[in-house]
Image 1: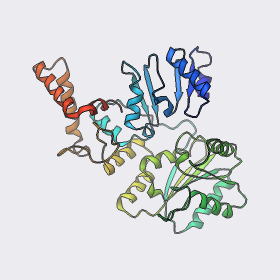
Image 2: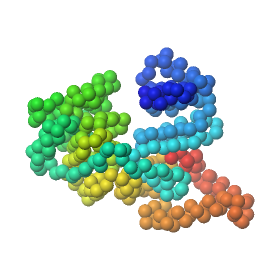
Image 3: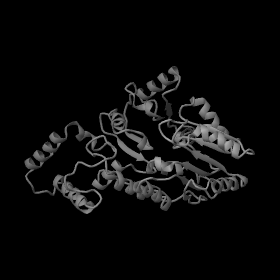
Image 4: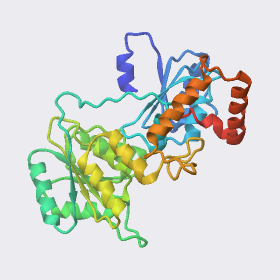
Length: 363
């Protein structure tokens, strides 16, 4: 919002911010401006999806980090306009369902595949937990160079159910191992204000090593952070790993993402190997698609087996693309097929799909 306000300063375009935790008076005033059309652009969180939010004329919906929103949530946002708004979906790693729809042709894709000037590609390494001293020595070298480090864990605290490192326990161990450096912890169970204060200290270089959960997955920009160690990396999905890795490499330092773990399955090892071999979001998404399968593009599942009896989205891609072209021709003015038969076919598809038919274009 601060960035948008600065950019729009001299344009006459008015922007508002709507958050779930905003003061009632401020939020009510912002909602009224949005409803009357006084506000041109609204920026916010899931709070924008609430029933109390009304747009005078929603023309464009921009959904950032779309894997954070469910299909029904995106549908609720787009349903706030009588006329279907344009939709721009932004994500570093397309989730399988979106990739499936791209193949079907319902989503046009623009790819930004260049790093900003001055940035270097992040080096990603697989690391077995057998030699921790080697890892700690590497971390110490980066700290001596003036860099900062994220250490990410799948758990906030120790669990009796699973034998995994936790953020709270490991932050204490890290503090003992690196006595000359300042450590801290951040996780989703902390109060928002406390979390924000720690992140501000980390950005101002008052903290050298930050133990965290996936709460840092998005919306964090610390250019000086040059190392991310992801403990039990096999416990994270490809999309999460790719998003987490994106928290480093945001400055001019050479940055590193260390995937520490012991994958017990072939799929687990394959996931980590994919991460180590590429930083291309679409390649990662394709691998995710192959491992998990596309979601039901006529439903709300984001991954899992598709509803095809014979076709396979991976191996039959050319056939599916041909089918898409045939469907476009069928609906075009050049089609010499009886218009009534075309209408009957569409009606049959709508009837079979039920209310899920409306979910096709949600993205």
